[in-house]
Image 1: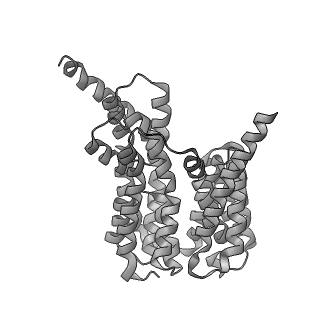
Image 2: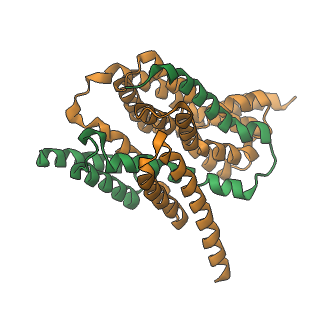
Length: 108
Length: 243
């Protein structure tokens, strides 16, 4: 359960912060050239942050109280594998979900 | 001005072309928003709070990150910093749109900033590169068009998900919908060796740092992985130049 006292601070703070990130260059920098080192780091934000969010959820799922779960681990690997091979987001979500349900059913 | 007579039809045309290009993304955004609505409600948010999240932030991955960290009872500052780190890519989109849209009036750029999304950027980066002769107003109209189907579906499907909310049974294993969705979104981004290295560093550091207090692991892993990706890119570029 979430502590409600800080919820609105998060919603509004995240809203303002996200807007400023979007506005930063197009609004303030205008036509000026961005430094290479900055763009080079920004290129990797998504692949740097998202795996760090997902990895602990895969390794220690809350649903099994943090115990490594063969069904969930396999489903995660299948999703990643299908995504790497096909580059198709829907296809890999479907493959991952199918694997998860099949294994949850088989492993009881 | 003679331009005004031809201006409106070309703007309308650009806007509709944007709409058509953005429309298929509704199929991606819709389920993602429903999932956010469901998970937010399950975490204890009411419909108003859930919907406010989607309207104010308009960034799925960051919203999920904030939600996840709040359920882990991370301090507010860590929640904000981590979710904003996820959204740093918006700054990259903003930077790469600037050469095309930077000449527009400030009020237009201020509005455009709100609708810089993965989907609108994906459409615009292809379109603007392909059609170099578009005028700035046409580009603005096109950009507004790409998000016209996406943003309302984002709101509406969040609302829908919040309505479904806690009625989803545990046996659906929805706890794992988030990891699966993120893995599926991430896999196609691993285009280069540098991207792959960033992702591997991210996974390893986040697992090693999982025991750190205040859920700081995500932030530390993110920053180190970003640096690893940037270093790797320099290294591979340098190597390619020498051979």
